[in-house]
Amino acid sequence: MIPTKKQCEKIWQEYNIPAPIIKHMELVSEICVFLGERLEKRGDKIDLEALKSAALLHDLDKIMIGRNERNHGFLTADILERRGIRELSGMIKKHALANITDATNKPEAIEEKVLFHSDKIASDKVISLEDRSFSWIEKYPEAKKIILEKLPALAALEQEILAKTDLKFEDIINKFNK
Ligand SMILES: [Fe+2]
Image (cartoon, rainbow, N blue to C red; front, side, top):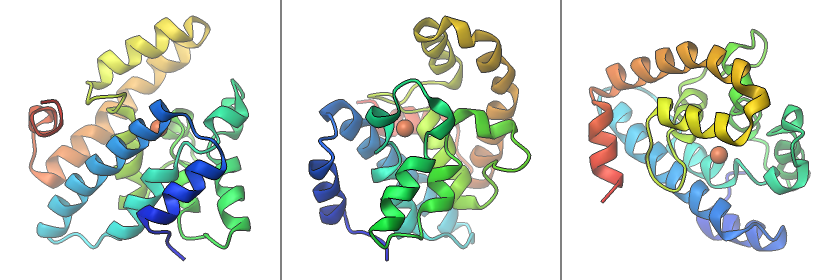
């Protein structure tokens, strides 16, 4: 089953998800819908309801895993699967940064790519991949090399999505940062 927004809100409450994480997931979900609707209009087949809900729940495990990024996404998928929500697992398991260059767990389906990209350009507002990477490096200086290694693949994914949606990055900024 694909949870509704109301059901997602109940899950946030149940796991005491902090307000800033909720705000981030809501922004990611809005960006996903914006991009997903553009893709749909241009002829791509995309499961918008699943994408929207996956975005609303993708960081559920953030406060549970702490710095153990390796499990990020997998724990959320487990929690949701135990509740009978299986349709979102692929998107959620593949959304962590490291997966972009992981041969076995990188985003491939269009919904997986859109969620991955939308998440990377959303803090509490839309931010460029370069600026987001710098803010990660400030927060996790020990991961600087890994973060910089991922940037070209991230930029390539962004180009793919912008080309498919016929958007410029500024269009996304203008839509969401008012
Ligand atoms: Fe996120």
